[in-house]
Length: 440
Ligand SMILES: Nc1nc2c(c(=O)[nH]1)N[C@H]1C(S)=C(S)[C@@H](COP(=O)(O)O)O[C@H]1N2
Ligand SMILES: [Mo]
Image (cartoon, rainbow, N blue to C red; front, side, top):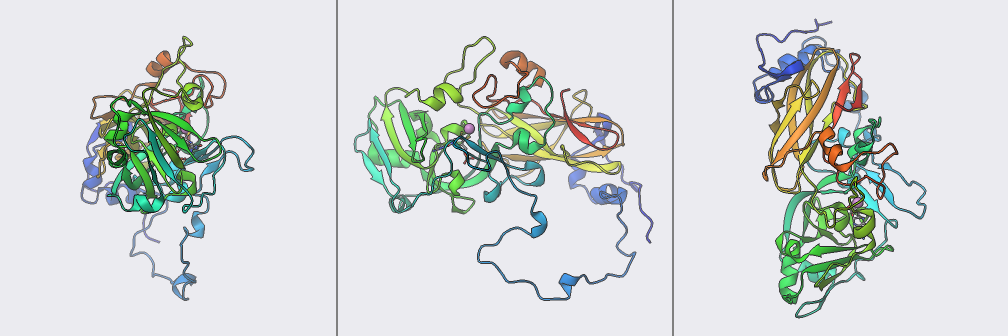
């Protein structure tokens, strides 16, 4: 048996903030993670490579299995699934939440992209689906999927986030749940399709048009009003998601994608765009997805998903085993543009150190941040705080709820308050290494 190494060797990482946060340079540094994380034993039992002769396991001694035409993850990954809140498909909305703490990088795999459908997932025949653009246009047009395939296309990486994501954090006591339950209504993909501006060039726009009423082909005929300015900026009719046709849950065969705007406006199964001089005041924009404020008034047309971040690991359910070096990692994003900075605290916000932002750092997309941390085995409170290129900073929870309110009921979409929570999330680490949701 080789001796377990528990020291950091000659390497002395620079401490940048309280309770063990180390300089992000250590992530890039020569052998620091080896000298630190591996030597102290990420799994508590690491031995040196020279210790024992290598023994061939069963899978090395026999040919592998049949190859599937469309492959699926290893059977050992069976728990890496979405949490679906309406498993019997009762006639109401259904949410499937992304398990962020079991993923890494910035792209959400297609099978794990969160889905919200207000009337189930429709089974749309792409050959029969049509997109109509009409109203205040010079030339109303109907597009089939084949028609759209002939237009110039673009691919862009970006997030979709429900306005109701993170709603549990409006609770006046910290709800004990994992990242999936707390922040699982946001995901990030590469979307490929035709820019809406390209199609509007074809139809022409009457100068009186200020709004576009977007309507889906599913049974709720979900309808939202979109400013023409957004349509001409970066709106897309997306047909592909991470290289393949978009999933039925994401709007097959086509969806409206409005980078950085509230999830509900990203109308799936898009079948109609009507240009008008005023918004339609539809059910979803006037009721469910309006942010109601403590004084009973509501924000109208609150589109932007503001700057936000959360730590995906460590997080509830991912307990720390032995004291030693860990990577604190998570995602940051902003509907305004690029993330410029993420700060991490391990002492509940008393001191902060800057995390490394992993390339690529793209506008309106998840940005992966990483920070080395030496857990000394004592209590800690981990927090992340993000800044964006618009100069916006993620608010402290206390400041945020002072403005927006909090609730003693379990918050839900459509209840007060439930929308656009973007304040800091805190994970408490106990001296046994368990991670809980706390307010700090
Ligand atoms: N046609 C249609 N579009 C829809 C919905 C829907 O139920 N039907 N749900 C909306 C909501 S509430 C959100 S948050 C986003 C979620 O997009 P996703 O399911 O692709 O993650 O789609 C929006 N677009
Ligand atoms: Mo939503």
